Image: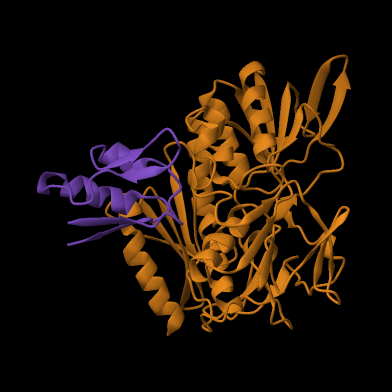
Length: 63
Length: 380
């Protein structure tokens, strides 16, 4: 699994961070960082939920 | 060197500048911002910023002020087409290519002039004032039952402030959604302790230090008023130099250019874009539409693309536990039908047999499928 974030769309809502905190992190500068672009399998479900629930549809997940 | 000037230093202007820089590293790019701020985003200003969940540094846009020359405060006061110059107070900014991204400003109610206790929420400064005011006022009256009014109501409740929300039509969000979705939003607000005054118009009077609001039926005392009765595209400074449409926006083609001009584009809240999928001009006040239009228009202006803009409009409103997402153009005068959804609720809006829009309530899992469905319907 590979994660890409479209930062033109990302609004730092931190919905993704809530669902998968070991993958997404909104830091003190207010911006989202993907801290694990190739997360292990046990996190896939959480990442897919983050992709679906991102209000601005900024997350793309590929195999 | 080609000079690109962008009038407007909010989301659409910033995005246009960032995208232009990506395309052409040599371009001379100047952004003229009316406010004395680095480019920031507005969606949190009626939500997380007011509750304190989103601090000021999270409102700034990524890369704000980087890769282009940013002049602030530099409100444009005129456009000289003969000389190809944007007129500023005491200065002029010549351009080869121009992007107009001046956004919109709140419609002001004559009976409620802006003041310390009467806030028209639009800018970061307005939001800071409101956030602070919610900390030391007990009762808030909101006039205007649109998305901003509903969001501010939920944020104020979160801060423990009593809220009355006044709307002159019979339903909340009455221009944007059908009556069934309105009803769900109304119930959500009421369940969270918001008092609704629907179908009412209000006046204010003063009794000593007390501010009294009357809707003709009841009178109540309030400390603070927030007014959100829509916005007006900011075109006054143009003094008619560019064509506008009935919706108040600058007339823009499906490519992003201002009608009749090859060197001038307009994007975001100020722009009335002809939309090929709908066969009519549309004007939006959505975060994502502003971003997409800015990028599309810059590609057209710089000769990097000559395709009509076909993005399906998308926006959202987060009302503390109720996430409303809208796709396409759901309008209250269309036929509203509910469809079953795995989670949340899904409403489709059709004109005759053609589905033109959708509203999803806490149904994020449905978004991709509904988007694809709408696009295929609209393109056929």
